[in-house]
Length: 160
Length: 321
Image: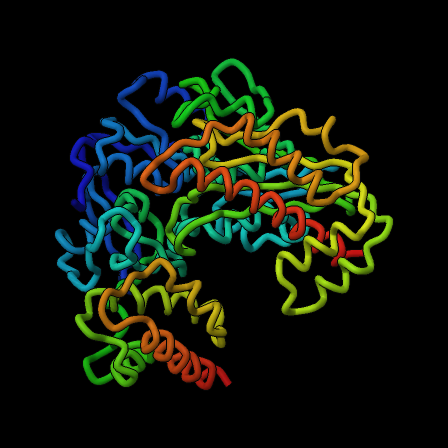
């Protein structure tokens, strides 16, 4: 059986028939072709599949697609307006060298985005808490934390 | 593995009655789902094999934290993150706060519910020991009746609870503790996030403070060690009005250590008394070897953590004196 759901994805209204066996990650990657959201462990433990749902970071690999009906979802694809206008977090990750293989990056950025929208000047502990569910296996976390701090300054600055 | 291939139908029910009727209709072919962080992982691991999921997330009025007639009431669909951010829990139910702050990751806590954590009934369920030491009652609603029972009667075994097939967990209810009582939970793990405890210990402590100046001083000193604090406690005169202890991963169910009253009530709180408490806990615990930790180590940590938790509870009590 298929079910019709409606939700907002990266600012656009979407109506789509989904199968009850789909996770949100499957819907994003295999049906909608948004391959920015990654599958790491597939068990909700590594954070590579993190997206933002109604403002909050969630892991899409263990989130049923059926549950996004009526909700607002942001993925990494929704951040940059054009290739010239990257999101402050994307710029910060590039400028601070917070990327090596890049596999954890979309998830890291979505976790950081959810944090900064609630708390535009987080301290280091708050940043670490926000990305504790995002595993990076190559750069280490120092540059990532630095990048989030750097982006926060910009977030904070733009609100003044 | 981005799909849950066995799932053929998915219901998003709008009422408890609808949920129960569907469960009765499909029986073992259907599973309830709230946040899904245990259920979906279980499906992927082939721990369960249902064809139908009944999502409870759209049942209105099951997500709340409120005070009512001396009780703190938590709706079953309340997420761990909501508990973590609640000013009603903060300070009053310290052990539960300790548990939700260290459960999963922010992503998990944003969707995982307290009702789900209890119904999943893992021996390691982090919210269980804190709720047990706070004498939590739970309310179940079924086709015929609504009933309440103490949380310790809810857990029957790993993954097994007293909830009947046609019942839903509705609410968790805790007596609001007196100002002289505080609680704490220690989840002993290798890393902070996304870990199950090797051992979990929760304590609720209510005391009568007679002489405690030295202990207060040691707590105020930023570099005092556990040993400093223990020594200061032994030199203090603090009488134990009530001490409750519960253990995670120490038995097939989250375990409330019973019959501590005779050991502790009215006695002076010190290393000797805490050793007697530990001894009683170890007699009731059924710790075992697993890949996460071995039994002898778990036992030693129960002793260490019982002492530390008493100090953490006292620190919290003295903060408000």
